[in-house]
Amino acid sequence: MSEIKKIDPRTLKRREAMVEAARELFCQHGLAGTTLEMITAEAGGSRRTIYELFGNKDGVFEAVIRDCTGRVTSAMSGLEMTDLPLREALIHYGETLMTLLTMPDTIRYMRLFLAEVPRFPKLGKVFYESGLMTGRRFIAAYFERQMAEGTFPKGDAQQAAVFFASLVKADYDIRQMSYIDWEPQAKDLHGHVTAAVDMFLRGYGIGPETASE
Image (cartoon, rainbow, N blue to C red; front, side):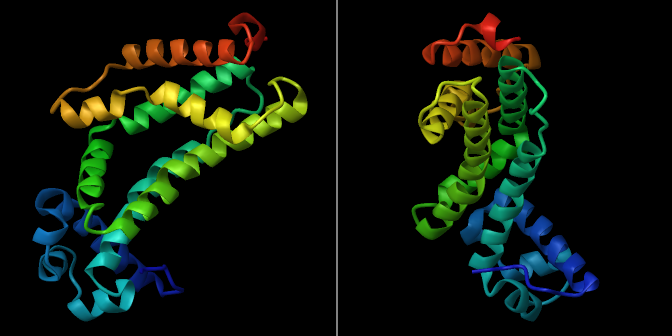
């Protein structure tokens, strides 16, 4: 599958254009309905360029997955939570996560990727590992730091991350993928995330007031 090799700036720009064009074409026509000719017609270049940069169409699809999930995970990994009280930090993380996950483009990409998983199980693993697990590792590392500092009960940080992410996500992403044109409002997301954080903290024996200090 595709890996970004050391290439010159002009070729890198062409690669980015191909990934962008392929992303929209895949969303419109699916993986099977998109041809290499359609991608090069939109982005320029040739089939040879695609073979050199991605290997084949599946390689282009993997590059699209990594690009889309990378946008979400880079935004999450860039969050500054160190100086915030525990409750405020978790609310900040949760609102940022839910805002990204419920964006129309994110839902489009999730529909596309999940529709192709049965035919390309390896790509499903790429989607899971480069997307969901990257964000989960970030929040797990945060819990590990809090455990070391004594602001969160010692235990399994990975499990805490799973519980936290599950409470925050709830059924919002599935509902959005099922209910066409339904989008949650910012105030709804804030209320939901706040309730989820408080429930999570209480589950670990931490009162919301204590975690706000």
